[in-house]
Image 1: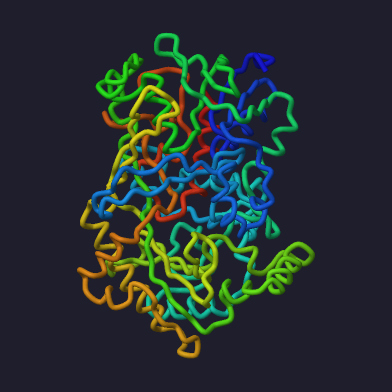
Image 2 (image 1 turned 30 degrees about the vertical axis):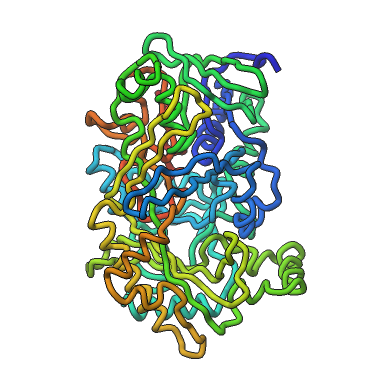
Length: 535
């Protein structure tokens, strides 16, 4: 392949959650010629279709990039850890843990307060509804006819029910709440991005439909290495496919949807970023934006581990080959219910760690399985975990290139737990989780494995958190929107100081949400597509 067959109006870089939505929506106008470029392959893995298959596909290097890792995190005892993300058509929507939550009304107000005018709850709600085919149908807060299926977890589980009951009693809040109402305080089963028990990724829904149109070209296994400029106007991209280095132009706009790790890297490599950093690697400065790569954030997750006599854990129901076969048949030949339909978490709670009500600041996850020593393999005993992360952490880090070579990993620092408030919230969450576990019925034989006695003191508990906290895979914020000197894009997602270039992905978030971020990324994709179409 030496060249593409035609010129394009729009080039979208990254066929993940947001990029697939943008390209698909732009192609709805038959006069638009749209190119969607993805570094990874097509989404062909069976494990991507089965909800619990995320535990398999996330370790498959064909579909998931494990090339990036953090620099030593000072507050986590100088530990480094990997930063995997989806590298295939569909991006992380094809490999994530499927829990689908939007966040709270206060989360979006915090965006507005940070300079993202027009991104409050009432502003973004129509765009959440636009992508949804929600199990509740069309309501004031849900959409019933969008491309992405949203349904309640399909494994009714007595142990999860016991957790929900105990959490409701300890927290004094409701159960079986609508976590996507904007006021999610309470406990219940999570909504998942599935339809009839099958993962509802962008690759298999909105993009699959859009690829039937002849004005959308999807180029896979092609890595964009640079944005090309004519003066201060973005006019095309350079990409590598196989051994060829090629370029393609865009008559109207280029959209970066490469994610919060890759998008700032591409901007910096292309001459958009802190001038001193770029000049240090011999990169010509097209336009200085000091905020490119700054404000990097993530949810840092940690939790408590328990053994139980309950027979309703994944460890127990999938313990033998016969049980695995029966549950496989139940999924493939039955009505797609049971343990194979769960995501990374089955049930959970939204709660406040500071005693206030109505504005939860922490997500608590009930995970009905205990992994073994090799990641997501199963331990040989019946157990569960109560995992958690603070909703809106204050700690911020950065993503900065370390070379002009696009294959060289940037330096990623999140500065997890650098802020006292972040440490306080996690420690309070751990204490609350302990109370909930203690309130579960005695006949379940719940006994704590970790942190155990180490967590009895504040010093021991914080030490345990520093030893065990890890990424929640919710990378965001590295090209945040706003109007101040450190923002990178304006509230219409246009890159400051240049023309013809937008960012539409998680990197534009000014702050984290009290939520798994995939729902918000889909919303950003929908809203970004509308901004572009109206320009």
